[in-house]
Length: 394
Image (cartoon, rainbow, N blue to C red; front, top):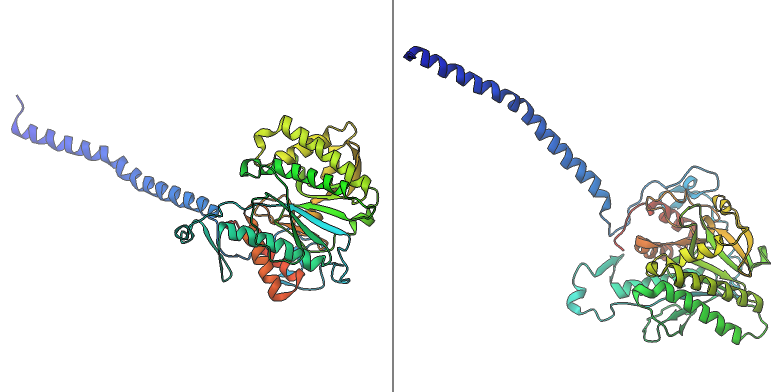
């Protein structure tokens, strides 16, 4: 039988045992709390960069320090010395033998007034508020304005759905309706088909003269006269742009065609080969990238083609699918602001075309607004380079 004194002693020991069992919990709990706090803060830091911004953010110019890049000469939005080796402003006749051709259509043109008040469909650039269709038209107009500045005598041709109603402000633009399926899911396929139809029309109307063609995306800025490639490289029929990218070495946002009968014919046959590859191999990518994958397939299928040539940013020519194909480096003729990509290192002082693809459309409109206020291409390019790594809202 346990005495009352022994019973009190047992209760005391059991209380100490409970306390000792709680000691590890008391020690570990603060550490668990700090781990949770650290995890939350780390997650917040990792999630923060994914937020897209609705205004320009300038950072130090991206790129390796080289004597021939803008990274060396930009102080904010000012170019410190004569940088851009442009020839386009020397003569007002620049572009006299050239037409830029782009495929464009507008979606969601029936947006209601109530929808326009929703932040999801409204963008503000400078002091202008845009709906989605209006900002698409603003990008198209900026595309035309840049061409007017750099190649004032050239023409812009917009290939579009006959049902489209486009509000064009630039004076150098003509609209060419071409029937087809311009839906979002089919647009890249339709673009190649529209290019081929346009070239067929030019063959039928060919009168012996020479007018060269640049088939481009509508989200590019031509910042220098590029007509000279037809004189510098006198023997090519069609030109493409390449980059050091193993999976997607070619970008379809820039295609040049020599405006002779032979050049137009051979370019048309080449694009028909691309269209065939697209339809037979890459229809699952018909909304995006299918045309570029088809281009790469046609080029790399040529037995003597050496893909290692894509690793060096030097122009070269190769006979492919019955055409003499000129390959131009993207670093000069299809340069894209990095947006953290690392594909391009800095901006060459000889850059001719800036491509505001993807979510860089805001930057294109901001760049045009900046140029309107300064009329200074080098300073504008410093603005682009200093803003290019930020993800914007459209």
